[in-house]
View (cartoon, rainbow, N blue to C red):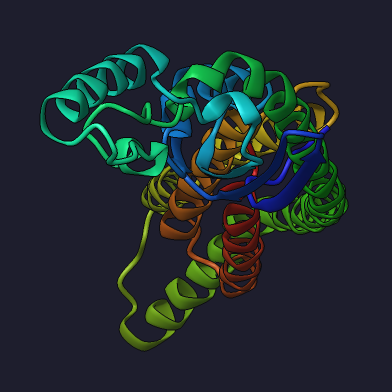
Length: 294
């Protein structure tokens, strides 16, 4: 089963205390590169987010965007009763000393330093909030994977079709290859006859055989045909693997390109050259596709 390396998934969870939104974008990359962006203080969750994502994704550039909005809670805002009691006692002592009739107002004490405690740090909620964020992350991953599977299935169908086209072209090359030497032999023999008619200089059969043998050795592409056929079969088998085999497919396409290039260099024949050009076009398309396979 092939998986595309590109896709998008979003997850959203709303509870009484927080709203968590996770967006995941996946792009091509030969290796796994993961980045997490989150509003403070939720960037501290990057290690656990990284661990969850890596369980499901092996290659690609993965961008995780986390947005969390927390509803304020009553316990987040508190008065410092110890400080206020101390301020009140001191204010009353001062009142008795200076003006017993002057009132002491609580509102005046609330603006004094330390009378109101700082709101609870949101980092104190991380452990509780993670229990809500995790389902949103898993939801985003599930939707991302669904898109990647859908695109992967489409690529698999196209790759199977391209592999079939390549095999068909290779079959034509294999059928044509033996005729190349025979054609060269016949042309060489005709040229020799012309020379004999024009000059009368004899050419020994041994020299003729030697020349044909040299050409046959230089233009022999049987090994390339066998290797290319083997690579195509391995490629087709890899497409059926349960774990997306992007690296293996990429390697096999590179090997097939190498064989076809060698074939084009060695085969001194117009028809084979045409088939080689077509094979290169097919393999270029295959290479473009497999570079997007996980």
